[in-house]
Image 1 (cartoon, rainbow, N blue to C red):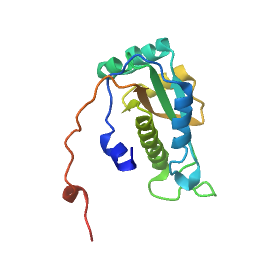
Image 2: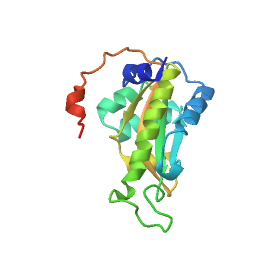
Image 3: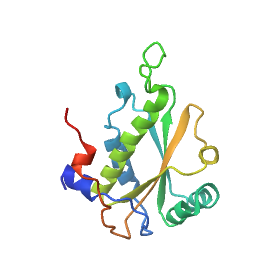
Image 4: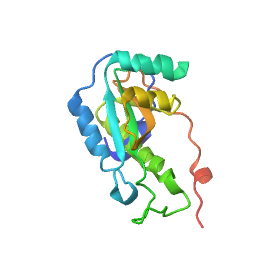
Amino acid sequence: MNVIECITSRRSIRKYKPDPVDHSIIDSIVSASSYSPSWKNTQITRYIAIEDSTVIGKIADEFTPSYNAKILNQAPMLIAVSVVKGVSGLDRDGSFATKKKDAWDMFDAGVACQTFCLAAKEYGLGTVIMGIFDEDKVSELLDIPEDQELAVLIAIGYPDVDPEAPKRKPVDELLQYR
């Protein structure tokens, strides 16, 4: 599969087969994701692969809305993505380099997450990125270090559905030349 095909065929998957995901595949996906661009190549994104159905169930049932819980309760694996705080967006003297200040943390996480999802697609896996959950309680449950911030959760597994692409906006609405 070429890059454009991978980008245009990737979908958010919300229904998974129960088959486990091999650790070597997750290792390869995270390795590929490490090549994502980041602020001054700081590579602040971190991953926790959760396979324990009890932990996934607790996150699903207690810390996410019901529509996300439904997805999580049948996903064989959940990836918690965090970022190391206080690195992206800063100059060497510790001051913010741009008006975006620490928003670069989430920018870097977003680029890494997209790379993660595209690499997963290459391995035949489906993903969906979820941002609505109780960050404090999930961070506590997963023992996220104080120097990190939980960014998103990514359900991952072998797709049990093949959804159609949602309608896309036309290029002339998205792009301007000046």
